[in-house]
Image (cartoon, rainbow, N blue to C red; front, side, top):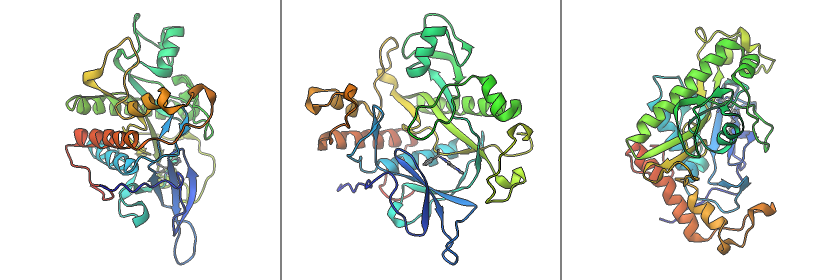
Length: 331
Ligand SMILES: C[C@H](c1ccccc1)n1cc(-c2ncnc(N)c2C#N)cn1
Protein backbone atom coordinates (compact mmCIF):
# COMPACT_ATOMS: atom_id res chain seq x y z
CA UNK A 1 0.00 0.00 0.00
CA UNK A 2 1.61 3.21 -1.11
CA UNK A 3 -0.44 5.77 0.76
CA UNK A 4 -1.13 8.98 -1.05
CA UNK A 5 -1.82 11.80 1.34
CA UNK A 6 -4.26 14.54 0.58
CA UNK A 7 -3.01 17.38 2.61
CA UNK A 8 -1.55 20.44 0.96
CA UNK A 9 -3.96 22.12 3.34
CA UNK A 10 -7.37 21.25 4.70
CA UNK A 11 -9.04 22.79 1.69
CA UNK A 12 -7.16 22.70 -1.64
CA UNK A 13 -8.38 24.50 -4.76
CA UNK A 14 -10.86 22.39 -6.67
CA UNK A 15 -11.60 23.07 -10.36
CA UNK A 16 -15.24 24.01 -10.93
CA UNK A 17 -15.81 24.69 -7.26
CA UNK A 18 -15.50 27.68 -4.95
CA UNK A 19 -14.33 27.21 -1.37
CA UNK A 20 -16.99 28.53 1.02
CA UNK A 21 -15.77 27.35 4.44
CA UNK A 22 -12.52 25.78 5.54
CA UNK A 23 -12.64 23.92 8.84
CA UNK A 24 -9.62 22.46 10.67
CA UNK A 25 -9.61 19.30 8.59
CA UNK A 26 -12.49 19.77 6.15
CA UNK A 27 -13.69 22.07 3.40
CA UNK A 28 -17.10 23.04 2.11
CA UNK A 29 -17.34 24.06 -1.54
CA UNK A 30 -20.02 25.43 -3.83
CA UNK A 31 -20.06 23.78 -7.27
CA UNK A 32 -19.87 26.37 -10.08
CA UNK A 33 -22.16 26.23 -13.09
CA UNK A 34 -19.70 25.66 -15.99
CA UNK A 35 -21.82 27.79 -18.33
CA UNK A 36 -22.20 30.86 -16.12
CA UNK A 37 -19.55 30.45 -13.42
CA UNK A 38 -22.35 31.05 -10.93
CA UNK A 39 -22.53 29.07 -7.70
CA UNK A 40 -24.97 26.15 -7.68
CA UNK A 41 -27.46 27.20 -5.00
CA UNK A 42 -28.84 23.74 -4.27
CA UNK A 43 -25.73 21.62 -3.68
CA UNK A 44 -22.50 21.79 -1.73
CA UNK A 45 -19.41 19.58 -1.80
CA UNK A 46 -18.26 18.46 1.66
CA UNK A 47 -14.60 17.41 1.52
CA UNK A 48 -12.64 15.62 4.27
CA UNK A 49 -8.85 16.03 4.21
CA UNK A 50 -6.30 13.55 5.58
CA UNK A 51 -5.31 16.00 8.27
CA UNK A 52 -5.61 15.16 11.94
CA UNK A 53 -5.81 17.41 14.94
CA UNK A 54 -4.55 16.82 18.49
CA UNK A 55 -4.32 19.08 21.51
CA UNK A 56 -6.03 21.88 19.53
CA UNK A 57 -3.34 21.78 16.83
CA UNK A 58 -3.76 20.57 13.26
CA UNK A 59 -0.68 18.45 12.57
CA UNK A 60 1.44 19.06 9.49
CA UNK A 61 1.71 15.34 8.83
CA UNK A 62 -1.26 13.80 7.04
CA UNK A 63 -2.77 10.43 7.87
CA UNK A 64 -3.22 8.78 4.46
CA UNK A 65 -6.85 7.72 3.79
CA UNK A 66 -8.20 9.34 6.98
CA UNK A 67 -10.52 11.58 4.96
CA UNK A 68 -11.76 8.63 2.93
CA UNK A 69 -12.31 6.36 5.96
CA UNK A 70 -14.28 9.00 7.84
CA UNK A 71 -16.35 9.91 4.77
CA UNK A 72 -17.22 6.23 4.15
CA UNK A 73 -18.04 5.74 7.84
CA UNK A 74 -20.36 8.75 7.87
CA UNK A 75 -22.14 7.51 4.73
CA UNK A 76 -22.64 4.12 6.40
CA UNK A 77 -24.11 5.78 9.53
CA UNK A 78 -26.48 7.92 7.45
CA UNK A 79 -27.93 4.63 6.12
CA UNK A 80 -28.10 3.06 9.58
CA UNK A 81 -29.95 6.13 10.91
CA UNK A 82 -32.26 6.75 7.95
CA UNK A 83 -35.34 5.69 9.97
CA UNK A 84 -34.52 8.31 12.61
CA UNK A 85 -33.84 11.29 10.34
CA UNK A 86 -33.51 12.16 6.67
CA UNK A 87 -29.98 13.17 5.67
CA UNK A 88 -28.40 15.69 3.28
CA UNK A 89 -26.34 13.36 1.05
CA UNK A 90 -27.05 13.58 -2.68
CA UNK A 91 -24.16 11.77 -4.36
CA UNK A 92 -20.65 10.37 -3.99
CA UNK A 93 -19.93 10.98 -7.69
CA UNK A 94 -17.31 13.62 -6.91
CA UNK A 95 -14.23 15.08 -8.68
CA UNK A 96 -11.39 12.56 -8.92
CA UNK A 97 -9.09 14.82 -6.82
CA UNK A 98 -11.35 14.10 -3.82
CA UNK A 99 -12.61 10.63 -4.81
CA UNK A 100 -13.82 8.66 -1.80
CA UNK A 101 -13.45 11.55 0.65
CA UNK A 102 -16.14 13.98 -0.48
CA UNK A 103 -19.90 14.02 -0.90
CA UNK A 104 -22.35 16.28 -2.69
CA UNK A 105 -24.98 17.35 -0.16
CA UNK A 106 -28.18 19.34 -0.27
CA UNK A 107 -27.59 22.99 0.62
CA UNK A 108 -29.60 23.57 3.81
CA UNK A 109 -30.18 26.42 6.25
CA UNK A 110 -28.27 25.15 9.26
CA UNK A 111 -29.66 25.51 12.78
CA UNK A 112 -27.39 27.72 14.92
CA UNK A 113 -26.81 25.00 17.52
CA UNK A 114 -24.02 22.43 17.99
CA UNK A 115 -26.09 19.38 18.94
CA UNK A 116 -23.98 17.31 21.34
CA UNK A 117 -25.12 14.27 23.27
CA UNK A 118 -23.13 12.34 25.89
CA UNK A 119 -23.56 8.65 26.77
CA UNK A 120 -20.43 8.61 28.95
CA UNK A 121 -19.13 11.42 31.11
CA UNK A 122 -15.71 12.88 30.27
CA UNK A 123 -13.98 16.07 29.06
CA UNK A 124 -15.94 19.28 29.44
CA UNK A 125 -19.05 17.46 30.62
CA UNK A 126 -17.15 15.84 33.48
CA UNK A 127 -15.66 19.19 34.51
CA UNK A 128 -19.11 20.80 34.61
CA UNK A 129 -20.50 17.83 36.59
CA UNK A 130 -17.60 18.00 39.08
CA UNK A 131 -18.37 21.68 39.68
CA UNK A 132 -22.19 21.58 39.69
CA UNK A 133 -23.47 18.00 39.85
CA UNK A 134 -25.26 18.73 36.58
CA UNK A 135 -24.38 18.85 32.88
CA UNK A 136 -26.15 21.40 30.67
CA UNK A 137 -28.53 21.92 33.57
CA UNK A 138 -29.45 18.23 33.78
CA UNK A 139 -28.95 16.76 37.29
CA UNK A 140 -26.87 13.56 37.29
CA UNK A 141 -26.44 10.82 39.93
CA UNK A 142 -23.72 11.39 42.55
CA UNK A 143 -20.39 9.61 42.45
CA UNK A 144 -19.82 9.65 38.69
CA UNK A 145 -16.18 9.55 37.58
CA UNK A 146 -14.23 10.02 34.33
CA UNK A 147 -15.71 7.59 31.84
CA UNK A 148 -18.86 6.75 33.81
CA UNK A 149 -21.75 5.56 31.66
CA UNK A 150 -24.72 7.91 32.06
CA UNK A 151 -28.12 6.41 32.89
CA UNK A 152 -29.19 7.58 29.42
CA UNK A 153 -27.58 9.92 26.85
CA UNK A 154 -27.85 13.60 27.83
CA UNK A 155 -28.26 16.46 25.33
CA UNK A 156 -25.45 18.97 26.03
CA UNK A 157 -25.69 21.62 23.30
CA UNK A 158 -23.27 24.43 22.62
CA UNK A 159 -23.13 27.57 20.56
CA UNK A 160 -21.38 27.66 17.22
CA UNK A 161 -18.24 29.56 18.15
CA UNK A 162 -16.35 31.44 15.43
CA UNK A 163 -13.80 29.26 13.55
CA UNK A 164 -10.95 28.24 15.76
CA UNK A 165 -12.65 29.11 19.05
CA UNK A 166 -14.16 26.58 21.45
CA UNK A 167 -17.92 26.11 21.36
CA UNK A 168 -19.59 27.37 24.54
CA UNK A 169 -21.98 25.04 26.41
CA UNK A 170 -25.53 26.37 26.59
CA UNK A 171 -28.62 25.17 28.47
CA UNK A 172 -31.66 23.65 26.82
CA UNK A 173 -33.55 26.85 27.72
CA UNK A 174 -31.01 28.81 25.67
CA UNK A 175 -31.53 26.42 22.74
CA UNK A 176 -35.27 27.14 23.03
CA UNK A 177 -34.47 30.87 22.84
CA UNK A 178 -32.29 30.27 19.78
CA UNK A 179 -34.59 28.04 17.72
CA UNK A 180 -37.90 27.95 19.61
CA UNK A 181 -39.23 25.22 21.91
CA UNK A 182 -40.48 22.93 19.12
CA UNK A 183 -37.24 22.71 17.12
CA UNK A 184 -35.24 22.60 20.38
CA UNK A 185 -37.17 19.54 21.56
CA UNK A 186 -36.88 17.90 18.15
CA UNK A 187 -33.09 18.31 17.79
CA UNK A 188 -32.61 17.23 21.42
CA UNK A 189 -34.64 14.05 20.87
CA UNK A 190 -32.95 13.32 17.53
CA UNK A 191 -29.41 13.88 18.86
CA UNK A 192 -30.04 11.58 21.85
CA UNK A 193 -31.70 8.94 19.62
CA UNK A 194 -28.76 9.04 17.17
CA UNK A 195 -26.20 8.48 19.93
CA UNK A 196 -28.37 5.78 21.53
CA UNK A 197 -28.68 3.96 18.19
CA UNK A 198 -25.00 4.49 17.46
CA UNK A 199 -24.05 2.87 20.76
CA UNK A 200 -26.47 -0.04 20.26
CA UNK A 201 -24.79 -0.82 16.92
CA UNK A 202 -21.23 -0.03 18.05
CA UNK A 203 -21.51 -2.09 21.26
CA UNK A 204 -22.03 -5.25 19.17
CA UNK A 205 -18.68 -4.44 17.54
CA UNK A 206 -16.76 -3.74 20.77
CA UNK A 207 -16.80 0.03 20.36
CA UNK A 208 -18.24 2.63 22.78
CA UNK A 209 -19.19 6.08 21.49
CA UNK A 210 -18.82 8.34 24.52
CA UNK A 211 -20.31 11.45 22.93
CA UNK A 212 -21.06 12.94 19.53
CA UNK A 213 -21.80 16.25 17.81
CA UNK A 214 -24.32 16.46 14.99
CA UNK A 215 -25.74 19.33 12.96
CA UNK A 216 -29.23 19.75 11.54
CA UNK A 217 -30.52 21.89 8.71
CA UNK A 218 -33.74 22.60 6.89
CA UNK A 219 -34.35 22.87 3.15
CA UNK A 220 -34.68 26.58 2.25
CA UNK A 221 -37.68 25.75 0.04
CA UNK A 222 -39.51 24.40 3.09
CA UNK A 223 -38.83 27.70 4.83
CA UNK A 224 -40.35 29.61 1.96
CA UNK A 225 -36.92 31.00 1.05
CA UNK A 226 -35.28 31.14 -2.34
CA UNK A 227 -32.13 29.02 -2.74
CA UNK A 228 -29.72 31.91 -2.69
CA UNK A 229 -31.51 33.83 0.04
CA UNK A 230 -29.58 34.26 3.24
CA UNK A 231 -32.05 36.37 5.15
CA UNK A 232 -32.51 35.89 8.88
CA UNK A 233 -34.73 32.93 9.83
CA UNK A 234 -37.31 33.05 12.62
CA UNK A 235 -36.63 29.50 13.77
CA UNK A 236 -39.34 29.65 16.43
CA UNK A 237 -41.93 29.89 13.67
CA UNK A 238 -40.76 26.60 12.12
CA UNK A 239 -42.92 23.57 12.90
CA UNK A 240 -40.80 20.39 12.95
CA UNK A 241 -43.96 18.37 12.30
CA UNK A 242 -44.35 20.18 8.98
CA UNK A 243 -40.75 20.62 7.73
CA UNK A 244 -38.03 17.94 7.52
CA UNK A 245 -35.31 18.34 10.13
CA UNK A 246 -32.36 17.02 8.10
CA UNK A 247 -29.25 15.40 9.58
CA UNK A 248 -26.26 17.16 7.94
CA UNK A 249 -22.47 17.46 8.30
CA UNK A 250 -20.72 14.21 9.33
CA UNK A 251 -22.25 11.70 11.72
CA UNK A 252 -20.74 9.42 14.39
CA UNK A 253 -17.16 9.61 13.12
CA UNK A 254 -14.06 9.62 15.36
CA UNK A 255 -13.69 13.32 14.46
CA UNK A 256 -17.21 14.24 15.58
CA UNK A 257 -17.33 11.74 18.45
CA UNK A 258 -15.17 10.06 21.09
CA UNK A 259 -14.58 6.38 20.16
CA UNK A 260 -13.38 4.00 22.88
CA UNK A 261 -12.55 0.28 22.76
CA UNK A 262 -15.11 -1.43 24.99
CA UNK A 263 -12.40 -3.87 26.17
CA UNK A 264 -10.28 -0.96 27.43
CA UNK A 265 -13.08 0.98 29.15
CA UNK A 266 -12.28 1.59 32.84
CA UNK A 267 -14.23 4.39 34.58
CA UNK A 268 -12.10 6.39 37.03
CA UNK A 269 -9.26 7.28 34.66
CA UNK A 270 -8.83 8.89 31.23
CA UNK A 271 -10.01 6.41 28.58
CA UNK A 272 -7.76 5.56 25.65
CA UNK A 273 -8.91 7.02 22.34
CA UNK A 274 -9.62 4.38 19.70
CA UNK A 275 -8.12 6.47 16.91
CA UNK A 276 -5.89 9.13 18.50
CA UNK A 277 -4.15 7.36 21.40
CA UNK A 278 -1.05 6.35 19.39
CA UNK A 279 -0.70 9.97 18.25
CA UNK A 280 -1.29 11.44 21.72
CA UNK A 281 1.12 9.01 23.41
CA UNK A 282 3.90 9.88 20.93
CA UNK A 283 3.26 13.64 21.12
CA UNK A 284 3.44 13.55 24.93
CA UNK A 285 6.47 11.24 25.01
CA UNK A 286 10.09 12.46 25.21
CA UNK A 287 10.56 11.02 21.70
CA UNK A 288 8.62 13.90 20.17
CA UNK A 289 10.60 16.61 21.94
CA UNK A 290 7.35 18.56 22.09
CA UNK A 291 5.74 20.27 25.07
CA UNK A 292 1.96 20.55 24.56
CA UNK A 293 1.82 23.39 27.10
CA UNK A 294 4.25 25.39 24.99
CA UNK A 295 1.70 26.35 22.34
CA UNK A 296 4.35 25.60 19.70
CA UNK A 297 3.15 23.52 16.75
CA UNK A 298 3.63 19.75 17.19
CA UNK A 299 6.52 18.17 15.29
CA UNK A 300 6.26 16.11 12.11
CA UNK A 301 5.13 12.55 12.89
CA UNK A 302 7.39 9.50 12.39
CA UNK A 303 6.22 7.01 9.76
CA UNK A 304 5.28 4.33 12.31
CA UNK A 305 2.96 6.72 14.20
CA UNK A 306 1.34 7.70 10.89
CA UNK A 307 0.88 4.10 9.79
CA UNK A 308 -0.41 2.93 13.18
CA UNK A 309 -2.88 5.82 13.27
CA UNK A 310 -4.04 5.08 9.73
CA UNK A 311 -4.53 1.45 10.77
CA UNK A 312 -6.75 2.57 13.69
CA UNK A 313 -9.05 4.47 11.35
CA UNK A 314 -9.26 1.54 8.93
CA UNK A 315 -9.86 -0.85 11.86
CA UNK A 316 -12.66 1.32 13.25
CA UNK A 317 -14.36 1.44 9.84
CA UNK A 318 -14.02 -2.28 9.09
CA UNK A 319 -15.04 -3.30 12.64
CA UNK A 320 -18.12 -1.06 12.61
CA UNK A 321 -19.36 -1.66 9.07
CA UNK A 322 -18.13 -5.23 8.49
CA UNK A 323 -16.90 -3.97 5.10
CA UNK A 324 -13.30 -3.96 3.83
CA UNK A 325 -11.97 -0.42 3.41
CA UNK A 326 -11.02 0.38 -0.19
CA UNK A 327 -9.02 3.57 -0.53
CA UNK A 328 -10.35 6.26 -2.82
CA UNK A 329 -13.58 4.61 -3.89
CA UNK A 330 -17.01 5.12 -2.31
CA UNK A 331 -18.28 1.95 -0.67
C1 LIG B 1 -19.77 22.91 9.97
C2 LIG B 1 -19.80 22.45 8.57
C3 LIG B 1 -18.49 22.64 7.87
C4 LIG B 1 -18.07 21.62 7.03
C5 LIG B 1 -16.85 21.73 6.38
C6 LIG B 1 -16.03 22.83 6.57
C7 LIG B 1 -16.47 23.86 7.42
C8 LIG B 1 -17.71 23.76 8.08
N1 LIG B 1 -20.86 23.15 7.80
C9 LIG B 1 -21.78 22.49 7.07
C10 LIG B 1 -22.58 23.42 6.49
C11 LIG B 1 -23.74 23.19 5.59
N2 LIG B 1 -24.37 24.29 5.12
C12 LIG B 1 -25.42 24.15 4.30
N3 LIG B 1 -25.91 22.95 3.93
C13 LIG B 1 -25.32 21.81 4.37
N4 LIG B 1 -25.79 20.58 3.95
C14 LIG B 1 -24.19 21.89 5.23
C15 LIG B 1 -23.58 20.69 5.69
N5 LIG B 1 -23.05 19.72 6.06
C16 LIG B 1 -22.11 24.66 6.93
N6 LIG B 1 -21.03 24.45 7.73
